[in-house]
Amino acid sequence: MAKLLKLIQNEWMKLWRKKATWIMLIMLIVLVIGLAGLNKWISSKNSAEDDSTGGAVTTEKAKGKDAPKLSWQEQEKIAIAENKKTLKEDGLSKDEKENLIEKNSISEYRLKNDIAPENEASMESFVLDSSGMLSLVTMFVVVIAAGIVAIEFSEGTIKMLLTRPVKRWKILTSKFATVLLFGIAMAAVTWITSVIIGLILFDSSGVGYLKWNGSEVVEQSIWLRSLYLYLISSVNIFVTATFAFMIGSVFRSNALAIGISMFLWFMGSNVVLFLRKYEFVKYLFFTYTDLTQFVYGTGLVEGTTMALALTVLSVYVVIFMAISYIVFTKRDITA
Image (cartoon, rainbow, N blue to C red; front, side):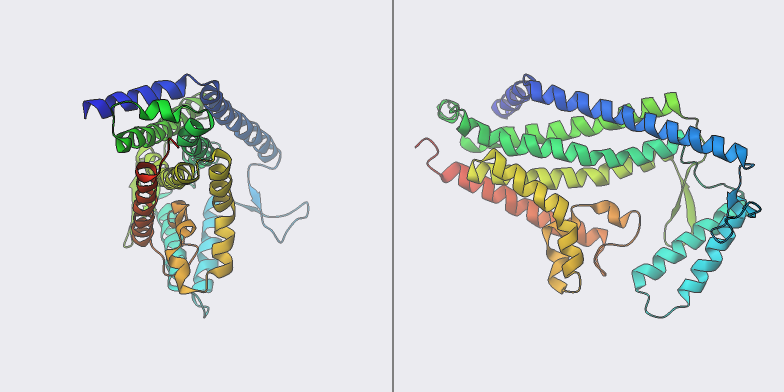
């Protein structure tokens, strides 16, 4: 165990001695700050427009000068009426009905307790929305996962690495652990940066997050909600990184691992939507590379759930890791 920890420490230090790693970190921080600045500018512009119109919202049908203004309460009532009308329509799936019931329940709770919808320009909204930046973290982690083994072959250092009195599985484990630690570190930096910048640039709404638990609406801490979103989004980082790590370990090609991983990441959802009517789609790897689909609504495929997604992904992760270890430990790498 001590040797394994030492290997992980060495790999971690080796990773952070590379300029590319620091470039990724700096780029991530700059982009989070840039996103906050853009949101602040847009919100300031919208606030100026609202001030010129009395701060109300016009209906879609009335675009003229004397268009009626709607308060948030009126907007919620209209949304409730439209959702109830939609619920009476035939052909709705179970997931779609549950989604409409959830929206109506939250809207009714807001009206009953006089809780305005979240302000898009609030600190809380920015922190929650910043979880979307983990898509960029996924890209960075894929680059590291794809190259951490393959680069040993391209640079010719693999033979020297394997001459050490350390078992191959420990070497591979240290590299995989380093990839995971890098992903955790980058996700943590994203969250911390978004919180700091959010506190500096935006005002707090002072309102918690409203969540439908299936039977009633409950108020949840905005911090717990943000951590939950980051945790769910991090599953995508972990699974995609594991896949890239396998490709890099098996084919010893950095470019191939990055290319295939990115292709599945970007095109996977399109493939799923094209094949969604087939039952086997429920068991494809890229159907669940974005678990936030179950947080913000229904899944891409009818009948899928978070529990099914985690089960399927767990099976794939085991398969990916098994292939990585078998190939790395059995192949004549030094030849």
